[in-house]
Length: 116
Length: 141
Image (cartoon, chains in turn cyan, green):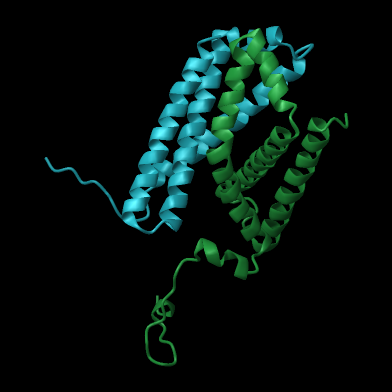
């Protein structure tokens, strides 16, 4: 069996294109949910604020939004590096550093959310 | 494809290259071009400063009652307010320019005149809302 993997042509990058848009819509939706919820808080106190994130639903929604941010940032930052950073070694270094940073941020987000 | 192979007067083949980031200042960009480059700049700003700063503040605000007070002290500093205002602009610009791109994907506002209109709308809406945020964080209401 042969696998034909398309590595050139108009369809290369379609997945990233789609990811960029799906994650964008998730981030917009979460922004509206968060804004709406914060507006219903009677007062911005620790109890009210932390209480919002105590709900498992909010934890999962927030994590989904933050993971979307990380994936969205990956596609965008990678595009910027591909356009402007020409030396291969430097570009590879920056891409790896970006992956490590975004992965670290995702882990950090999980520890913050599940410590409430 | 004949155009792409056009020869320059001296007979050499003309070379077309992408703009480099350092050449941008020398070009007069159309409005859509300004929105586009600001989309990149705002995205880069949120990646470099926004994500780590917001996660840090998020952690401070949630960990405990004491750290929440610490969070309030940090965000009441004028310089932090200024940075957060910059990030608010970046978020708002990125958001509205992004919605414009989603509409373009749906073939809405692709023609020259409407595209210019939506580019202008993106700048006006994001800058107006940034002004509202500025008035809010610096205590006008």
